[in-house]
Image (tube, rainbow, N blue to C red; front, top):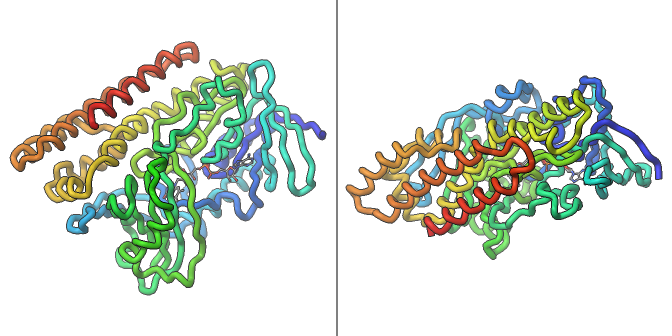
Length: 452
Ligand SMILES: Cc1cc2nc3c(=O)[nH]c(=O)nc-3n(C[C@H](O)[C@H](O)[C@H](O)COP(=O)(O)OP(=O)(O)OC[C@H]3O[C@@H](n4cnc5c(N)ncnc54)[C@H](O)[C@@H]3O)c2cc1C
């Protein structure tokens, strides 16, 4: 078998992997990025393709432009299950052409020295002396196996988790996904019969019958093109996602021209707190494989970018010291938790609460503005659901008489605060990880009991 040596191997060229490569390029390191897909399909995966502008700003990444940008977004409209209430939440973003943008990042990284091999799959890790030391690859163009030896592997394999899942199970980096902490999602992209009104606004429809534990979306990609789809909670034994799609499509996208579809397909999104550690000896995990998507709305492109940024920063530090142990790469966790992970943990609790609400309760809450749009925005931006908001809600609810909802809201706010505090006390080195994990797991168990 042919043997090659690199400083870093990045497995997967989606948003997570491409961002990591983009930040690592031109820093004097020998880097190889591989993806199983052919070049022109890298970045092409089932997705709603909506990304908030703040992620690009915060990470110093280029905005999508030209063919990479399909629609500038001004905000989101959220509709109640009975369609009687709609909330408008302002916030700039982009409806992107994901393959075009991802390939742009990869090309820029390539121009600055990163080698990119398409049609190449990581088959298994090389794991020696407690360290990941590379991977065995299969190159479909030459039909041959390659052994790539590295100082660091960055796994960005998306929801397939196809590399870290082959590492010894006792490593905390292999933690598996409970299906209930995922959404199964499906979307189609096609043309509309008429011009879309208000194309600058994404539409989200909440309805527990049409999308249990998730929501329907209608995301304009220009005046007469739309990305329409839905997510439902995984692990619940619901009928197939496609059954829901066919049954309710007309309610949410009656203007979609079914005969003129551009693309269709489904995939899974993790909707939980991040992996307990993104780093171990010789390896960092980013993106969906590290469970970085937002637990409430399932958006994962922005946070895949954040994790890629943190991975790159931590990798550069490790190359300065020549130490690739979990301890040395631990900064990835601290960086990611500060920027997004703590908020994710708190939003996981909010998601668990929302999934238990009935359509009636959601109609009621939205109509009476038990929580207001601004509070919802605050919650989704920061993962804080302030007790002051609950106190205001308490006055409304107690006047109208819904004591059980009131009690639950208060509990949710308290637990969201608590879990954020636990994340702010994330251990500074791997030794204390198990103790910290036990605190997180206890809090999740107690929360589920409390909102039963
Ligand atoms: C239907 C749906 C709608 C969504 N809508 C949105 C949205 O509107 N906005 C948003 O921000 N997020 C959305 N998400 C989530 C978002 O798509 C993901 O969070 C994000 O794309 C994850 O990026 P990633 O780089 O981690 O993984 P991916 O984009 O999945 O990339 C992984 C790459 O790794 C490659 N790969 C895997 N295994 C190997 C291997 N062994 N060897 C070589 N290559 C390998 C794959 O070919 C792939 O290119 C949605 C998800 C779904 C399913």
